[in-house]
Length: 76
Image (tube, rainbow, N blue to C red; front, side, top):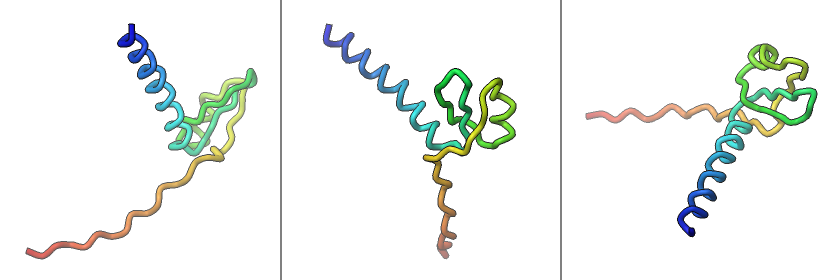
């Protein structure tokens, strides 16, 4: 019984973790007219193609990745 309960907890946690990550990783969100929010679009055009009767907004939680600093080259 404990194994089943533990498996259910892991499954629920894993399924919600992916959604939360997607909502932070992508800069555009679709808000359907029936409520809710899905932030899984990398461009406004992509969001508009899938918005249906809803509308698109910029993701308020999105933070663009910092530019990588040029690495030092090792000499041999």
